[in-house]
Amino acid sequence: MSDIDKVKKLRQTTGAGFKDCNLALKESNGNLEKASEILRIKGIAKASKKMTRDAKEGVVVISGDQKKTSIIEINCETDFVAKNNDFINFVIELSEINNICSSDLDKLNKSNMKNGQNVEDNLVSLIAKIGEKITIGRSETIENSNSQIYSYQHSVIKDNVSKLGVIISLECSEKTEELDHFGKQLSMHIAATNPLTLEAEDIDKQILQKEEELISEELKNSGKSEEIAKKISAGKLQKFKEENSLMNQSWVMEPKKKVKQIISELNIPNIKIKEFIRIKIGE
Image (cartoon, rainbow, N blue to C red; front, side, top):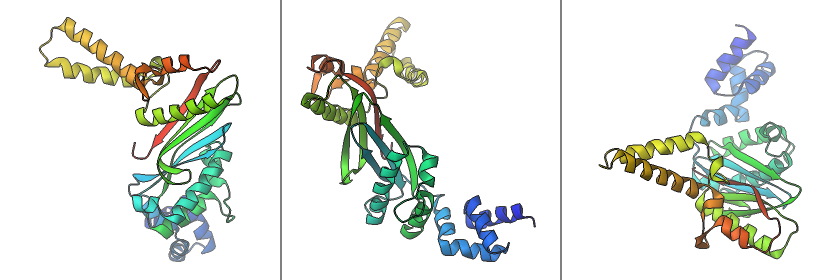
């Protein structure tokens, strides 16, 4: 059996990755049985087999300051593990490294943690110890030199660990108390309303097409004439755009006004929303 065939065979029997199987075979001088034992001892095989299961729970962690902030999602199988101290300590340190790496997953996985081992190896060890599938999910970083970054977290578990997180970047001429207040309120608004984009014209055309199809299907058996149905469809689509674009949404704290109206009324010169990111576990 060739070396590559042995690696394939070991992967099939243990569920471990190519790199781990290759190293184990080298350590065992090509002995498949011994290589399998090496993987088992290291916990790699055990951890890898768990990766076929669903991980729909987890946490969202935010790290950084008002100039550079990152948000990262780490998934696990149960809410119980999401509150486990070993898990929480791991995700807090992981989030800090992620901010340094600017959400570059390759860099993140290869980065060393406090114990001297890289993120990838620590993740495998944690899976083996806890006994659940754990994966690194969505991750984004905001870094704008001429803006201030604000964040909000909902269903907080500990410190900057929660079930929902929002980070936003506001560009302005100067940092003021009013800006800080608005930044916090806007973060809370985004958490509650979940806008897709900043402006209506930025909404993905495929999303709009799908929504239009759903509206048409809904009106198909309504008994309305074609002309009236078209008007209703256009109105519904416009409403969808407004409800899903941040600037056109009704302000949560004052629903009779749109977000863009609230911004125009602020005593903050040249304020502009640069970008925002919202991550919620399960969405």
